[in-house]
Length: 185
Image (cartoon, rainbow, N blue to C red; front, side):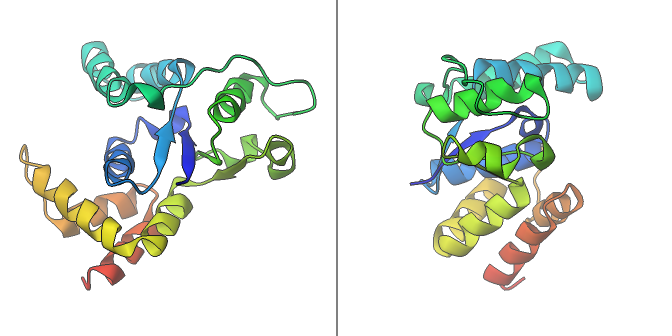
């Protein structure tokens, strides 16, 4: 099964995070993240999006507690052979490498050059590309997972069309199209 390290910029996108963690529940991939990444996500939720700090802490604590083995460490650090454009992203690559991830799922592909990640057996993927790959390779599981996800939403309830429209408008257009095709919508 593919192991994907989720970068901090994923978690502020709550609808996307919902889909990713639902796909993980359906054994479509194993997610990983680190305390450092969740700390960055907390700051983004509060400072950039204006979320209530108590809400942000509850949200991220719930994610942290889903499965203890999803949490990996950024130590040991990467050696100097791996050069990233932003030194502050080294902890992401280190944690992904330490957790034996196959890929880093991130919106910031430019921060994780392919040739540098290849040195440690990693690649980076945009979440839209990653979700399309999962859905195309495991269509029955993807459809089941999405149906269960939408059915679980009660406050407020949402339809599959609303779910896919929201994902499409928040940077997941190919995934939304793929799911519409798989579900004949």
